[in-house]
Amino acid sequence: MHFNKLIVLLILLLTGCYQNEIMQKKEYIFGTIVEVTIYGETKDHASDAIELVFKEFRRLHNYLHPWKKSIIQDINQSIKNEKIYTTDDEEILSIIKHNKELESMTSGYFNPAIGNLIKAWGFHRDQNPTDRPNSILIDNLQRNLPHMSEINIHRGYIESKNKNIQLDLGGYAKGYALDQAKKILSENNINNALINIGGNILALGKHGDRNWVVGIQNPRKPNPIGSISLNPGWSIGTSGDYQRYFIVDNQRYSHLIDPNTGYPATNSQSATVLLPPIESSGTLSDVYSKPLFIAPEKLKFSIAKELGIDFYMIVMADGKISISNDMLSVIKWHEKIDEKNITVH
Image (tube, rainbow, N blue to C red):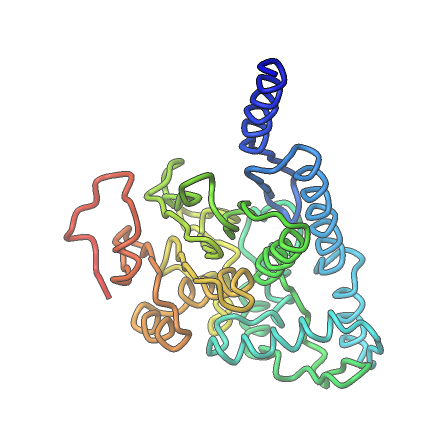
């Protein structure tokens, strides 16, 4: 009798330890390091769920790739050739419709139709560029700037009269992938996980009895400037000029291009947004950081208010920090910040 009790006790103890293990996988997808961490599940269950998520990531990487063979490339080619693209793919129709809405909502600071500008700057390939493009080319592209509103979507086809449109969903795909991963993990009864796609992060549940904690990168140092305790279901996204860039004559040129000038935005070092578990929160945490990074300083805060972003932090070009009062209440600084260098909104 005592022996049977001991066996039961050992099984319970071993099961408890097993359930609290961390299962993690990293891979290079979407041009960045992708990481999925699952807490408190059996090894087999967690491993199977992670593989499903990474299978979806690889699908989306190939599906939405802007310059390799993909449905986006096919659509771009059709628009360039002034042809109608016919499709029964409801997913891509929904994605393009959503991007049309997001360009309008962000006053055009998020504009996925400017693939030709991105290509001219050399960010349309895996390696970072090394030199500035011809200014006449950039000015010409900017004067003929295309917009998502010029794309017509009907049931079964996509077309545009503006052949200058070239879709690049690089500022959308990672956030969309976060939402897809959340859906897959939830459907597979994974309650506690952290999904990180190059700094775009979504939390499911908790890490044991505490929230998942994530760092916010210092844009000019290799360490975090601070950290956030993510409540279950919350997501965080950062756009920064330290992710993809090149330097010429001491001037930094990043991949974050201002559609209104045709040139990389230079008034910010990084912009971080934190969003509650609303619909498409992963996608929006990726997208919404772009207008806060790109827009002129005097417009950033009105745009944040218009988009309903309560939690945000912007490191300006001079290193000073503009932060919302809500964000200030949840961030834990990792280095001493001079109060003179912080503006609270």
